Image (cartoon, rainbow, N blue to C red; front, side, top):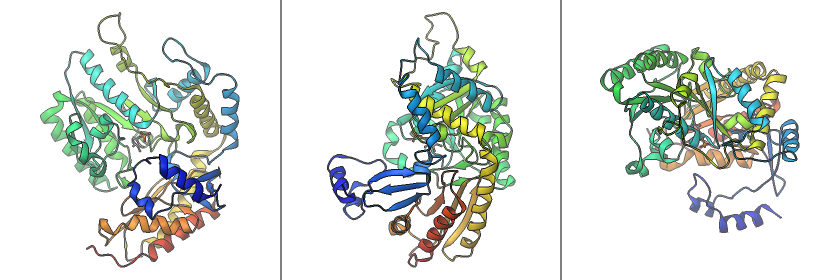
Length: 437
Ligand SMILES: *Cc1c(COP(=O)(O)O)cnc(C)c1O
């Protein structure tokens, strides 16, 4: 088997996610044979550093011996069982641990299979819990430039045009309030004021505000100050609106704390987790909420008050084993402290990008670093040029538009970071003169 033979079979049968398939007339599909640590290897023996953690999920490396071992143990014990009326030990243990680790006051876990469906769970729960209190609040608020997934409900509360525009007629009611413009405290205060104005007008219709705390991932790695999260928490409480913290991306150590909300010292009404939850092994997501919300659904049979939402694979035992193994690593190794060192090494590397003439801004929050390019038009597909060059040098970068970003697995070594940043630097220096302003 070679790259070519598998790629050909692939292109005959598979429709890939988030892809204009015609691009593959010139862009080779890369069939990955195996992974180890930050490295992926294809069928022709080329190796690539996974600088984007395979769409932001992989935190402890590919084929991590510890996580793999725990899944192997589980697979011979119980693979899956219906979660209605039945339970299993891995999910009970996982839930106990998540409740301990997440901000104080989040005391109930509801499971789904991916980030988008967990966002849908949080939206439905928020709406339904108000309804159970006798309030009709059918409107959601999200931040400009936000991303919460691509199923219809999750897409509705997002604001990245690229994904949303086509489907506008299908979406549920959502309005946007402005995200802080930059990482300053002033921007945070100004944006919170905007939200306050909206609440003063429409709070009685609004079920919840959903945010990506600190970093808007798919929204081109836009970053803002934790103060904003603190301020909107106060506002939500004051106006009886829920705060949903979508930590699908930022959760599990990515921003420098285990959860991003910790930096704002707040507890949201819902926290949504997925991506890093299983170390990047298996699809699993969870919504944690407060006992106050849980109690609104707890009553005698027959009042349409129960939360009738389910997925066939809810609480899959193998995925829970992977999640428990991931939490073991957080518990046994000094992950958050080590990440601080890795992040500061990233900061050093970023310095030299700042002086390049086609770089507009360099930004970083914990183990997310982004370089915003300037001077190009979107039809120049500058991100694609960076992608192709980096691949040819053995680094998987996948720029978002004009943003070249780095979100490697936490276990990346200094030498591997040298390769990653050196390659990105060469790729950016080699770019042609832009046609934009
Ligand atoms: C990726 C992502 C989602 C969607 O998760 P999927 O598992 O891809 O459905 C939701 N919210 C945020 C912030 C994300 O980054």
